Length: 333
Image 1 (cartoon, rainbow, N blue to C red):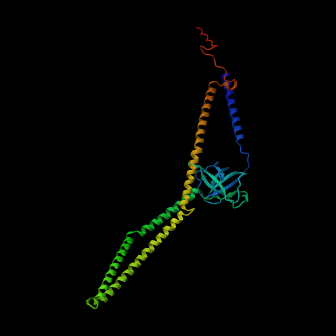
Image 2 (cartoon, helix red, strand yellow; image 1 turned 135 degrees about the horizontal axis):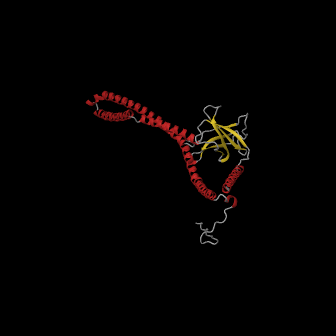
C-alpha cells in the first residue's frame, strides 16, 4: 500500500512540474508588442502559404499571417489577414508580394515600399486597411515565358512561310529568268555588232527582228524584277519583325534580362539554403535526438525507482565482494 501511495505522489509531482514548465514557457515566449491588423486581397493563388507564415518588410520579419479565406468583397480573390508590429513603416505606397523560401516551397508575405507616399496607411472604417497585392516574380516569369513562347512560335511560322516550297520555287524561277535575260542581252549585243559590222549586207535586214527581241527581253527582265521586288519585300518584312522581336527580348528589362535575374535569384536562394538552413536543421536534429535519449533514460529511471523523485536516487546496495555487503539469511526449512 505504501508503494502505491509513493507512486501516486510521484506521478502527481511529475504532472505539476510539467504544468509549471508549460506555463513558464508560454509566459516567456509571449508577444507583448502591439500588433496592427491589415488585409491583403490577392487575385493570384497562394499555394504554399499557411496560417502563422511570416510577414517580412524588405526581408525583416515584422509579423505573421493570422487568417486565410476567400474574399467576399472582391469575388474570386483570396483574403489574407496579417498582424504587423508597430515598428513596421506601413504607408499608403506599401505593397505586398508572395515570396518563397528557397527549395522548401514554403511561402511568406513580402512587404515593400518604393517611398512614393510617406503617409501612414490607416483604416477608414471598422474593416482593417487593405494593402495592395502585386504579382510575384514567379508569376511575372511565368507570364513572360508564355509571351516569349508565343512570339517565338509566330516568328517560326513566318520563317517557315517565307521558306516554303512555293516561295523557294518562285525564287529559283526568278533567278533562272534573270539568267535567261542576261543571255538574251548578250545575244542581242553580239547581233548588234554583227549588224553594224555588215555595213548594209544581208544581216542588216535583221535589225527590226533584233529590236523586237530586245523589247521582249526587256519586258521579261521587267517582270522578273517585279517578282524579285515582291519577294524582297516579304523578306524585308519578316526580317524587320524578327529584328524587332530580338531587340525587345535583348533590351534592358526585357524577357532575357528577366529570365537572367530570376535565375540568379533562384541560385542565390539555393546557396543561402545550403550554407545556412541545412547546417542549422542538422544541428537542431542532433540536439532533438540527444534530448529525446536523455528524457528516455530519465523516464526509465523514474519507472524503476519512482521514490527517487521525492527522496533522491540514494546509494546503491553493496554487492558481493564490496564493503558493507551482508549475505541474505538462509530460508528456514
